[in-house]
Amino acid sequence: MTAGRAGDARFWLAAHRGGLAAAALYVAMFSLFVAENPAGLTAGIANTAANSGALLALVAMAQTIPVLTAGLDLSVGSVFVMANCLGSHVIAGAPHQIAIGVVAVLASGVAAGALNGAVVVFGRLQPIIATLATGAMYHGVALWLRPAPGGEIDERFAELMTSSLGDVVPVSLVVLAVVVGAVWIPYRRSVLGRAAYAIGSSEHAAYVSGVPVARGKLVAYVLAGLLAAVAGLLLTCVTMSGEANAVLGGSYTLSSIAAVVIGGTSLAGGSGTAIASILGAFVLRTIGDLLFVFEIDPLLQQLFLGVVLLVAVSLGAFRLLQVKNRLEFYR
Image (tube, rainbow, N blue to C red):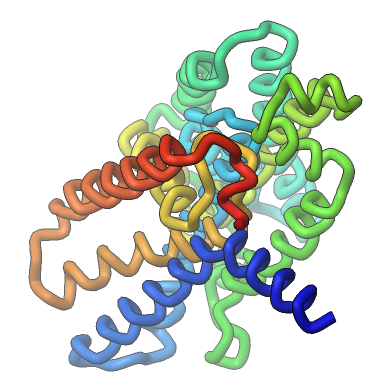
């Protein structure tokens, strides 16, 4: 019994070592940021860090699910920006109108994800090519909605989403926790969630074993669109406006991939978790904070991001080439 428990613990640590490493790195980096920041850790600083981290964490979650199926969604940043632009039109008015607007924003993400999934599954196109094309479409929709930055957002709703509960717990972290509990955990434990891992490990073996490959892929992209839209909704509340910013969309797409890799999810598919990607997202956001407190040009953040992504992907690829059987990852 003891040996069995030790084996289970070893298996769990092997499966989650990427997330544990990201958590340790985040704690170390955030502690350094607080120590070097002249203002220390105030409620305002914590809330600002939580809001920016939650935005990328949601987009990273959106990226994680297609990656588990050995795909890559290059449209998550465009869906994120499109949802922001739509939200800047519909998040206003009476409470029931705001509720309808929130549903409309989330529905736009679901529709975008469903289109991505349909093109990948039924069009039989490579996910990178398919989502690169659809991402351009979604950015076009964003430009149509917001040819110039602007919008009228209900201030009370925006303040509610970006404030802190009792000046202690940022609401954005509560939203992130609710999304994890309502979307990721049920999905991870569902048949289609397990199918995503099977597809990423070996699509042919999954198909032969009776795994619903088509549905598994389709749902993965639908959830990616939904999560990107949640992030776009939160961005609308943070900025109080909408903007069809292609640079922002591209930056979040790249950062989401980096967060996924830092969290230990294999770009080859079949292993990883969205929770680890969340930790990876907060690590990336803390890099920007550290650049600020050490008075390094913030424009260099993209350089640091590129280096981190290159190193992380290279290490993951090197490790993947060393094994002949993916079960060796957990031995």
